Length: 222
Image 1: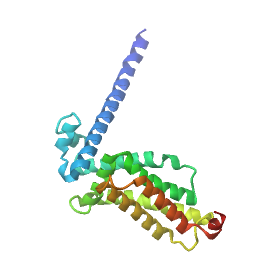
Image 2: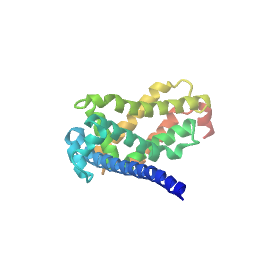
Image 3: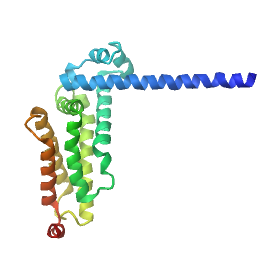
Image 4: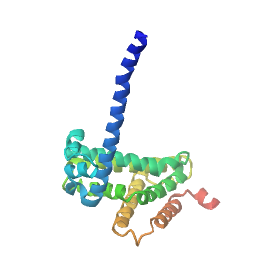
C-alpha cells in the first residue's frame, strides 16, 4: 500500500505539469488570436502588447512576459499565420504534381485569402510594415514569401521533367511572375473586397498559366 501511494504521489506532479503546459498553450493561442485581430485592424505599430493582453482577456503585461519583446511576438504571429495558411490552403494538394499541382496551388493561394480576413490582412500589413517601420521583421516575412515562390518554382521544374511544361520556361523567373500576380491580386482584393471576385480571378490565372506554360504535346492533346 505504501508503495502504491508513493507511485501516486510521483504521478501527480507530472499530470499537473502537463495541465500547466496545456493552459500556457491555450493562453498563448488567445494572445496570438487577439494579436492577429488587432494587427489586422491597426497594423503592427498601432497594436500595442498591452492592448493585445487586454483584448485576450489577460493582463497588459502578459504578452511581454510570454514573448519577451514586441518583435518576438510579431515573429510568433507570422509563424502562426504561415502555419495556418499552409494547413488550410495546401492540405488538399498532396498527390498533385507538375502542371496540375502548379495550377491547383495558384487557386489554393487565392482561395486561402477569403478564408480569414484577419489572417490575410495581418500578414499583408506585416509585409508592408517590414519595409518601413518594423525593418527587424523583414527577414522573417521575406522567408515566408521565398518559401511560397520556391514551391511554385519546384512545381514548374517538376512539370518540365514530366514533359508537361515547356522546356524553354525559366522556373525561377516564371515563379517570381506568378507569385507577384498572386500577391498583387490579394493586395487588390484587400482594398476592394466587394468588387473583386477572387474565386473567378483565381480560375482565370490558373487557366492562363496552364495555356502559357503547357508543352506542345499537351496542348495538342486538349
